[in-house]
Each structure stands twice: as C-alpha cells, then as structure tokens.
Amino acid sequence: MALLIQPSTRRNFLLSGAAAVAASTLHAAGKSVRWALLSDVHIPADPSNSYRGFKPFANFERVVPHLVEWEPEAIHINGDIARQHGNAAEYQSCRQLIDPLAARIPVALGLGNHDNRDEFQAAFAKPAGERQPVKGKHVTVVRSGPVRLVFLDSQFIVDQVPGLLGRAQREWLDGYLRQDPSTPTLLFVHHTLEDEDGALLDAERLLRIAAAHRGVKAIFYGHSHQYKYGVHEGVHLVNLPAVAYNFTDDQPTGWVAAEFTATGCDLKLHATGGNQSGDGKSRSLAWRG
Image (cartoon, rainbow, N blue to C red; front, top):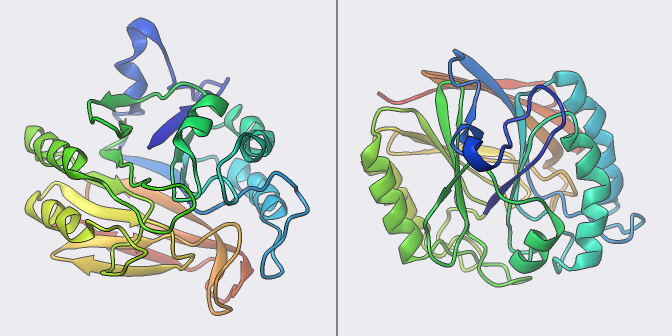
C-alpha cells in the first residue's frame, strides 16, 4: 500500500478532485528523476525505545536533514512505518517526524508487516497517485520523470512476518503491465523475495510476472534489514537497508539515493549507522532491453 503525504511547496503532486489524474505524474517530461528510498523505519510511540543499541526515532531524525539537503523529487518509505503493532500511538509518533518532512518534499508510504492498514489510513492523508482497483489491497502508481513506480501491497497479518500479494493483486499487475509495455517500470514491495516462510509467500509468482514483462526493470524491497543486490532474468532486485536498526553487525542502517533514467539508475548508499564501510558508494544498474 502506498500513500502520498501532501507537501505545501511547488513540488506538490498530491492533488484532489479534477486534478486527480495529474496527481500520479511527477515531472513526467524530465530525462531523470531523483527519489530517496527508505525502508523499515519502525518509528515507536516512545522516542526513547531502542533495539540492538539503536533508537529508531532518533535514527529517522538523523536522516531528515540529509534528505532535505539532497532535494529529491520525492521520498518513498517502503513499509514497516510503525515500530511493531501499527497502533494509533505509533502512528501519532510517525506523524511527528514525517509531517514536517512532507511539508517540503512529497513522501510516499508503503505498508509492511508491522503496519496496520486501518490505523494507518486513519492517521495519514488520503491516498494519492493513480489508485488501482485491487480488491482487499491498496495499490498506487506514480509516473515520475521517465519511469513508472508501482507500489504494491504485501501487508498480510499485522505483526506477523510473512507477506502476501494475493491472486487479485497479481492478476491486476499482469493486466496492467500489458497495457503499457514500453514505459520503464519499477515495482516496490515490502517483503523479501526468497523462498522462506517469513518472506513474500507468493514471491515466485511475482518474479514470474516481472520477468515476463520487459517493461519491468527492477523490484525494490525491504523487510530483511539488509542492503544487497540481485538479478532475476534481467530484472534487478534491490534490497533496501533499514533506517531503524540492523539485524547483524555487518549491515548498515540508512537510506539510498536513487536517480532514475529511461535506461537505468544510479544508487548511492547513505549509511548512518551499523556497518558504514559502504557509505557514499554508488552502483549503476542498466535496464534490460
């Protein structure tokens, strides 16, 4: 699930009413577009909450000035917005951090396994972008520069590890991609794509759909609190690091600066904690033809 929080600046692409169609497009004529990619922020109701020596609230505060300085076209947080249960108190705390940022830069939010759909929708603004008719899920598409970003909904059971797209969402995605096979398309989903009980339970079927549509260039995901790359039949797989904390000392915490073009993307790690040996290092990905 993806929501766009309304900014109050010229960057505003969260509109309503007659302008709803335009809300799904961000600088559509540009040759490149910059997005700040975050995941697993796990913001707690109590700012002093800590895990493995990390304080998620403070970690998010630490990245905000860096995001503002970089001036991306938009920011995406790829799930696990809330610390654990996705309750009203956690989302109230989330808003303390996200609202001031969203006043300057558009912020897209996705759901993870520690989020609660009902509480999340009650806490944040109405969904924007191009909403899709997927029963029981909330799917949003944003056209941004030369690419199209598809925010999928893998939230399954609150505070349980596995994720699930479900048949309706998979069938929608397959049909949607057939309608426009040429636009470079990036898929975002919270859960990992491995064959594990705690991953996306229908990951194999998602990968099959992505591989079959040449317009799909990459899948970005989170959940594992790792930063790594892979490829599946020409589709790039990017596991985004967590902002809140790592699970193992060899992994960083932080975010990724992404610049998307029609032919590929440049990704730069901004490590703010954990293993920071990769901080500032970039990687370029070329889209398959």
